[in-house]
Amino acid sequence: MEMKTTKLTTRLSSIAVLIVAALLLELTTAMQYFSTRTGITRQMVEMAHRDLSESDRTAELKREVELTVAQMLPTLGRLTSQLASDSLHLYIDEILGQQDEIVGFDFCLVKGKNGKPDGIYIYKDDKTGAPTEHHIDFDFTKRSWYQEGIKCDGFWSEPYMSNYKVILMCTYSRPVRDAEGQIVAILGADVPMRDVSALASQLFEDQQRSLLPIVLLHGLGLLLLAFIIVRSVRSIRRLQVVGAEKERIANELSIASRIQQAMLPKAAPLPEHGNVELSAALTPAREVGGDFYDFVVRDEKLFFCIGDVSGKGVPAALVMAMAISAFRMMSEHESAPERIIAQINNSMARDNDYNMFITLFIGVLDLKTGKLLYSNAGHKPPMIDKQPLPVTPNLPVGILPEFDFALQETTIKKGSTLFLYTDGLTEAENETHELFGLERMQAIIDSAVQEEVSPEVFIDRMTEAVHDFVGETEQSDDLTMLALRYQSKQDCTADIELQHHLTLPCDVAQTTRLGEWIEGICETASLSASATMQINLAIEEAVVNVMKYAYPDNSNGEVQIDASIDHEWLKFIITDAGRPFDPTTSDDVDTSLSAEERNIGGLGIHLMRKMMDSINYERIDGHNVLTMGKKIVKG
Image 1 (spheres, helix red, strand yellow):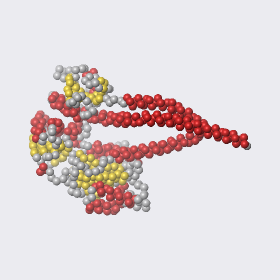
Image 2 (cartoon, helix red, strand yellow):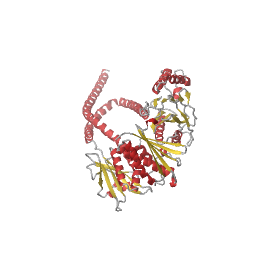
Image 3 (tube, helix red, strand yellow):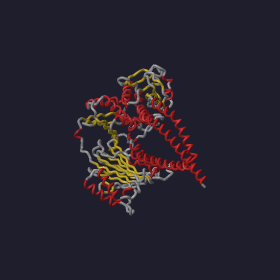
Image 4 (spheres, one colour):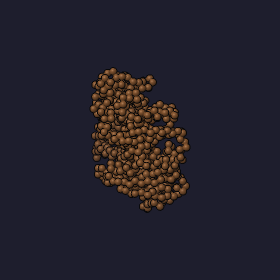
């Protein structure tokens, strides 16, 4: 018996020694590894942050370059057709001066004066940064950016060494077409390549070399332990995998929640639009949810929405992201709320295999007049002061494609507050399953309206009331609220310092008079040469569009242009009696089509928006009225 006890003790002692030895080995190698890694990591962190930020910048830079080139094509095509080389060079110089990442433009005519390809290279001087022109004296037709650029609408070349700068660069090229859709030139934008961090690469290689012996030592230690406690190790590993998976899911949900919150605008008083205050709050029931709100200001109009996706969690959050992205995209060029809802509905209803839907309310508030256009898709009626806003319910978004959503309108009085909410407010439950309900909500609204509190205080009071009612009960549904208070501005017509008027017949050739007229007005307003050029390009683009599309087939008609100047704005009002034509609703043009096949508008409206600070269209008494504004910055 004593022999067996002694053997057992010896075995246990041997096992203990092995375990201690293995632990010491692990501890030694771990200390070596972490002491080495600490020094390397400290240096790499800074480099990694820089390299990652530059990597993130690459995608954004690519989009900016492609958009800039696309916006230049219509104007370059028109100026090339008009043989206006001076204006063409000035236009390219202007665009180049606005770009930080583009170092030069290659503009190559397919047929120059001698009938052969001819080109110029306009680049920034390294010392002064001023645009510099140089005639291309090598055979650029053999370059890939020319050969491939003439074949397709958009080509990025492989990196190459510039003939004029000691720099490695890539060129993005596209064909320039005339009014008949024929290719007349190639435009290339040169973008310098960013250096790869050689130090970061060297540090990584050093770390990889030191990692191999450390991994081998760890492996020996783990093998030693495996003979003794294999079952325990397996159990621990299984627990670690489960724990890591739970932690990963929790981290991903936390990141998704932050991303979802980041998608929402920061609701606060709008400093540039002092006649409206806005505040909003969203509290998801889980880490992520399906409620959302959004608002944008365009052309002196406030576009806003609130929505509630059916279901909860990640699926609802994905649909929410699609909906809010669609709203922002549609509101960039569409001014009618019922058409915005219809387009979102059509895109959501297609391939809706999971039968999810969205209750949605969209409003468009004219900040000058208080006129509110709105359309509802199955959402709770908003409250305007103490009364519910009359709404046509309509179907929720995503159920039936091509549904005809009703348009409604009202006028918000000065000092009135519009309150929008999701059903997570009225259906919030306490521990006895009692609902917060409409009566409690109405009592908070009555008090807030009576005291004329700000939208921020309005939302805070409603949030506090719900939290007090619910107590410690777990939230069962997403809760979203939005409040806006309208304060109309006084009439500013007395501030107008100067007015001008010009009448042009429907003849594109007469637009030469427009340039001289605009230059005189800009000179009166003491605007810079750069601002004058931008205004000239934008107004000419708008007038030419009117002549082409509001008066088709060269029909007789006139275009009335009125200009007014006050201490803040230079405004142009373009009026015609042609057929209804709203350029602000035009979709992006497909440049792969010929000029005759393209839809009305497109890149032209993007140019006008880029050059001007506000654009607004109205149809008044059978006339198209396009108002374009530029904030006055005197040169």
